View 1 (cartoon, rainbow, N blue to C red):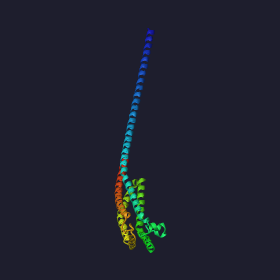
View 2: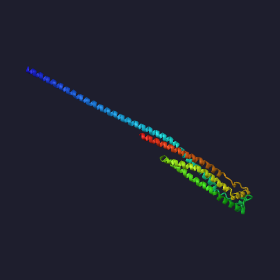
View 3: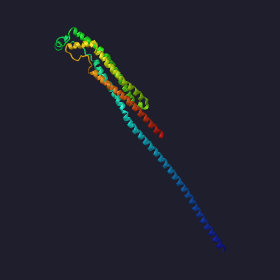
View 4: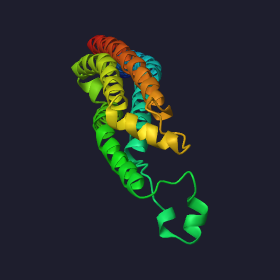
Length: 288
């Protein structure tokens, strides 16, 4: 009996050890499962946080790209509108160039009489006869040509000088526009508008003074005597009246009035467009 009881006790102890070991294994498995669940939960939270951050970044990037594309579209439209002042400034250059040409042609044309018949020979045969001035008449008509040329020079000199200055002004405004100075400093457009408007109005008295001076030149006794002498020999084209270059000068002057005043209007419109563009750009920067 004692041995059997001892054997039963030892069996109970072994079974108890087995149960204890089995319970200990299950308790370790539960702890590991809890740690795995907590790790999965933490990884899921991190993954969700990363996804949220990435979505916010993507949303901000897309919004920034959208605003930039809108700004580029607006600037593209504004740049097309800003081409009009440049075209108008090129028209100013072209008009003043034509004015200089129309004034330079009569200025450079001396138009003096050449007494080729006095050279004799073939010259006397081809250029002599009833239409030639000889002796004192030839010297007198040459003197009248010289005096008339000196008399008509001041209006043409004034016209060429004014046209050259206005060409320089137009080129300067065009250069400022090419280097985008009005966009960086919009008040330049207001200065341009004021100057262009004043220049446009200044054309009107300039044209009036030009024709008044020419009228005085053509009414001068020197011109009248010269005209009579050439008519006495049957020569045409020496009348004391406005010629084609003078009339073209006046027409281009009127065109200059229109072009410069229209340029002033475009400069004001460009100033408003630049201010609106800068305001939209500031609002977009504030949104970020």
